[in-house]
Image (cartoon, rainbow, N blue to C red; front, side):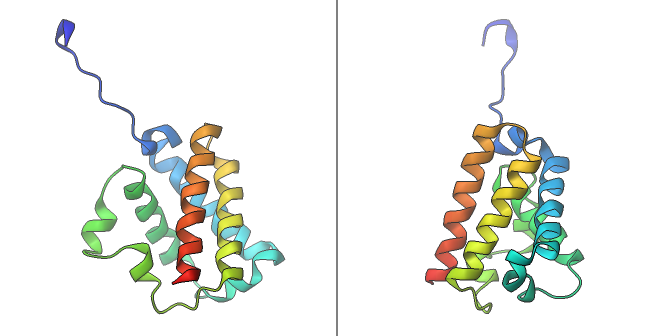
Length: 132
């Protein structure tokens, strides 16, 4: 490149604001799931202590968005479908997950175009779990 510099393309992880924004999004998601009655069925699928889930989803989303790949290193050969294979994901609970995550993303990701794409992709992934 001219001048000897190269620019690295921003990842979605960079565009959403990195780990702080991913963690805020995950915390908002689980807070909504625990406080809003419209997500009660989804909440019942989870353990009482959401701490481990908050950490795991933060790691997964960070990696999925192109950030640190630690989650995949800690869960070799795993994906969201395989991790949820033994969970009874219905169309109703998948829809609740997608709606809660879409709200959390909208609340925590400043770039609305990136937020919309992220929410759409995660919603599709979630609905596929119900179809499986």
